[in-house]
Picture 1 (spheres, rainbow, N blue to C red):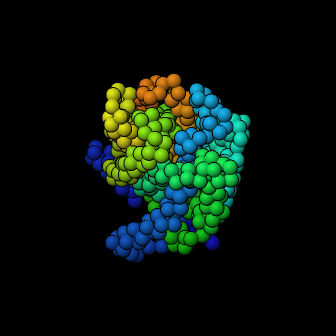
Picture 2 (cartoon, helix red, strand yellow; picture 1 turned 120 degrees about the horizontal axis):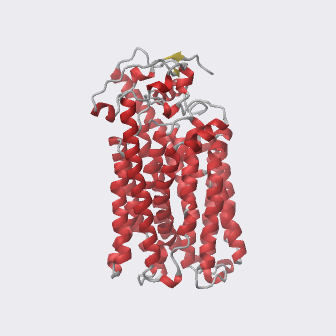
Picture 3 (cartoon, rainbow, N blue to C red; picture 1 turned 90 degrees about the horizontal axis):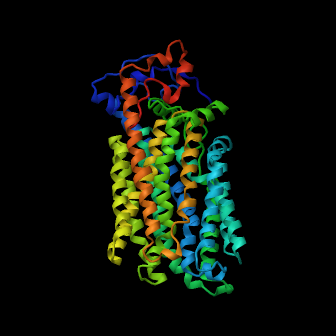
Amino acid sequence: MKQETEHVDVDSLRTPSNDEKAVGINLEPKASYGYLPPDPDAGRSEAEKEVIDRKLKWKLDLKIIPWLCLLYLCSFLDRTNIGNAKLDGLTTDLGLGTDTSLYNAALSIFFVSYSIFEPLTNILLKRLKPSLFLPAIMILWGIVMTTMGLCTNFSGLMAARFFLGLAEAGLFPGVTYYLSCWYKRNEFGIRAAIFFSAAAVAGSFGGLLAAAINLMAGIGHKGGWAWIFILEGLATFVIGIISFWMVHDFPDDATFLSDDDRARVIRRLKFDNQSSAEHEDFKMAYFWAAVKDWKTWNGAVIYMGADGALYAFSLFLPTIIADLGFTATTAQLLTVPPYAAAAIMTITVGYVADRTAQRGLCNIATSFLGIAGFSMLLGGSSAGVRYAGTFLGAMGIYPCIPNTISWASNNIEGVYKRGVALGIIIGWGNLNGIVSSNIYRAQDKPTYKPGHATVLGYMILFLLGGSIVQRILLQRENKKRLAGGRDHWIVGKSDQEIDALGDKRPDFIYTM
């Protein structure tokens, strides 16, 4: 049942940001805009409201986060398990040869379909609802994953990888956008980090699972690699069916929320200068607003630095370790510790970034770990040094993925504008998976210096350099807004027109 809305002066209720506190500015209401449902906690003390708010966040976390983590674990496992399958006879059984060119082509084709369709998926997510869209695409990629285990030649593998990318395209951008519609800006980072840590767990779990499944080699006249695809695909299909009952819609439609809790979710987002929980009809103007925003493209540059490195690492880590002199099974097991370290680091960085609101500095500091790690892989002469480099590499790459997405999400406001911007950022980043798929060549083993040097360049130029540039530009814009230099943007506008400006509102202070 829809409730009547009340008109509330949002700015008079908003807590000053760290930037505002640093320059000693007290927020004064510049205009009355923002429409909210009635406060269900009117008349309660601040202490009582804090207790209610903590219980609400805990309720949201339990209902939303665990199942989404499981979905992404399946997604990342299904797209990267080809690296484990390669060690268990994939290239030999399908006649891909020894020069890795056909194998790399199979890796690359995934990112073509994945990247092309990603910018469109958040629009579909908003229009079709998460409870329908996410389970449906999961069922589709579970079917594709299973049939990949039935491939008998290179053409079949290429077709399966293309459709796998198409089916998986909506999950990561969709879920990150979905989470941003539930949580305040200073709460989003740790949730995104926990969600993305499932990728590191998938890498860790994937090595263990591949080592166990390979014991089925020969059953049904199929190699161990085929059973990796078949069993993991069937598991994804089953989880996709269950997801129809486990994935919830946006706050304005979620059935697990009472009317009071729904009002609380919408109000707390509004006080955070967000409109993401509200209904908004799609207009092409929102699409073009995202395309014309410099933060979209700078975010894409930063994300390509992290994502290009991520896919190079996750797709080739088993091969890199195997070429340090270990057997296939041992190499599978040795992939587990670096991923475990990456998962811990990802959550730690997410927590620190939320607490400090310094996402740019977190990106910059973390990237130095990855740069050190790949420098060790590039210049190290012993297997021990290079294996240690994989730890630093993982710890420097994985945290930057959710932190970069959280940073972009924090600073782009508007229901569809944010969705389109995240789709572009993530799509462009994943397009660089094509590069990542082709930089570790058979002729470069066992040192793989061209591959390591390429990843190193990505991290220095795009991840580190892009983060520095974005932080400088955001800091400069914040100073202008706090000094009143953007107040003329709202002159003569109505409350609704001002509210529609999103992150162009003069009182919208960017997260650094």
